[in-house]
Amino acid sequence: MEFSAIPPKQPVEIYGSPWIIFADGAIDENTASDFLRFMQHNKIPEKSLLYLNSLGGNLLGGIGFGREIRRLGITTEVGIRDRNGKPMVGGCYSACALSFLGGIFRYIPQGSAFGVHRFSSGRHSDEDLDVAQVVSASIIQYIRDMSVDVGLFNIMTSVGPDNIIVLSQDELVRYGVVNSGHERTFWSIESAGTGLYLKGERKTYHGVNKFIILCNSMAPRVLLAIFEAEGREDDIMNIRNYSLIVDGVFVSLSNNLLLRQIVSGGIVNAFFSLDESKLAMIGRASTVGIAFQPVADREIFLGFQGMDFRDGAKKLPGFLSTCR
Image (cartoon, rainbow, N blue to C red; front, side, top):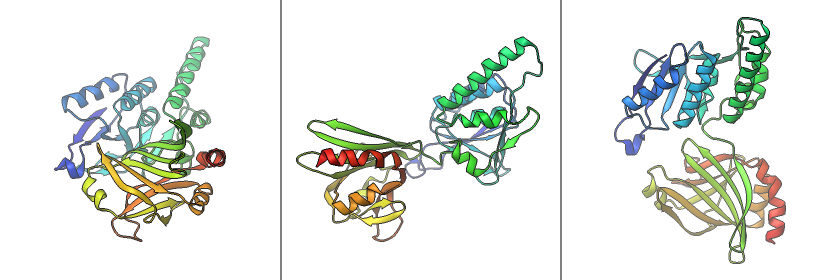
C-alpha cells in the first residue's frame, strides 16, 4: 500500500492541524507498521483524515492496520487522490473494509463503495477449518471492538469468497459502518454533592458534546450545555441568541440564560433554566442539541445538534420524579 499526505492550510487557528492522508493499493501484513512509519517520518498529528482506496489483501493485515488507525485517533473516509491532489470517490473492499472500521469517525460519500465477502483459506482440510473458525472469531471481536454492529459479519458470510457485496447507504448507517462524525451517545443518571443530573455525552469530530439536566435544591431543572469552542472563543462570548434544538426544531432559550456562558480551556459551559413546556419537548424528542446563534432566527450556529435522546427519554421521567 502506498501513502501520501497533504499538510493543513495555514493558519492552523482557522483551518485546524489535521493532515489529509491517502492510502492506495493492496494491504499486506506490513501495512500497519508501514503506516506508523509514514506518520512518524512526516510528523503527522493524530486525529488526521485518512482516505482509503483498495481492493483488499491480507485479512489479518487489514485488522492490524485498522487497530493502528484506531490507536492513532484517525478519521477514515473512502476515496482516492486525483491528479490535483484532491479527494474523489473510491472503493474499499475485503481487507480494506475491515481497516476502514478502525476510524474513530467514518464517512463514505455517495459514489464511493464499501464491499465485503467471506473469508476463505482456499483449502478444505480439518486444520484449515479450525483456522477459519479462529479467524472468524477474530473478525467478530474486531468488529465489536470498533463499536460496529456484528450483523456486518453476517453479511460477510452470506456471499462466497469470490463475490463482493457492496453495502447500500442505508446498510452502512444501520450497521454503524459510518457514523457521520460522531460516536454513540451515552445517557446516565449521576450524582454530585446533594444533587442529581441526567447526562448525555458523545464524542464527535469537533470534540465532546454534553447535554446535562441538573437537579438540586438551589437550581432545579437546569440545562447545562458543554461543547468545544474550536478556536471561536471570542465569537462565542459575544453571542446573545440561544436555542434548544429538538428534532431539528429551534426553540429560543435567549430568555432562559442563567449566567453568561463560560469558556475555559477551549470548552464552553452554558446554563439555562427549563420550564415545564421545554421539559415536555425534550421528553418527546428523538434528538436534542444546543445552538449559539450570531443572528436570531437563523440556522447558522455554534454548538451541536442531532444528539440521540431515545435512551435519555427512557430515563427522564424517573429522573424528574426524583427531582420533584
